[in-house]
Structures are given as structure tokens and as C-alpha cells.
Amino acid sequence: MNRPNDDMSLNALVLLALGGLAVFIAYRDPQLGQALGIGAVVITVLVLLLKGGRQ
Image (cartoon, rainbow, N blue to C red; front, side, top):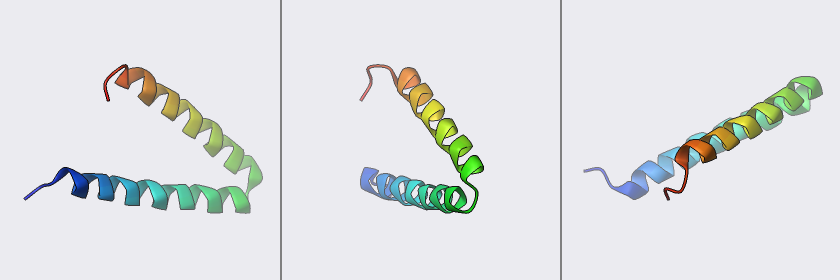
């Protein structure tokens, strides 16, 4: 049985884990953290552009 909330919960958990890892890496190495931040912004913009008007 696959409910939409289960998928959202899993996605949220993965995103929080990756976000925490990125914060830890940025704390340990500021230059690498800056590169991760720029990469995250670029990926976010691309996802929003590809998603278009769909919700």
C-alpha cells in the first residue's frame, strides 16, 4: 500500500539528511561549503524551471 504521505515523508527525511551533511561539510571546509551552496541553488532553479507551472 503506497500512500502519497509516505513518499513525502521519505523525501523530506532524505532532504533533511542531505542538508545536514551539507551543513557539516560547510562547517569543516568553508570553500567546499560555498561550492555546495552554489550547486544547491543551481539545482533548485533547474528543478523549478523544469517543473514549470505544475504543482
